[in-house]
Image 1 (cartoon, rainbow, N blue to C red):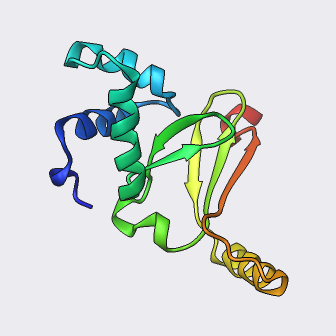
Image 2 (image 1 turned 30 degrees about the vertical axis):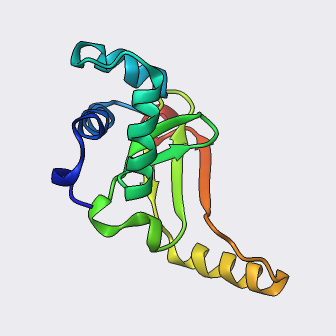
Length: 132
């Protein structure tokens, strides 16, 4: 999905996430966009719902927050497991993919007769800068 095809609200929410230093909750996004006419959480949630559908943003389940996709041009949602390393100290989030993990999880699911719909891995700890 091209960002040129987004609605005004979707574009503003996406830009807020792109500029953010770390993950943002829907209410943090709302606060950042009040000057742009956002008044209700529903405006943010509707935009986020579509951005998630388009694969432009990800929801971090453990933080109940959102980040812009680091690889939107690669269609993250359709090429395997999305994994995030989340720093507990500074809040930095690093998105990555590891196809060997994809294969291991696929093998496990197949052996169990399980049909996975979505797989997201969140690793919490300290980034290299915060460990120093």
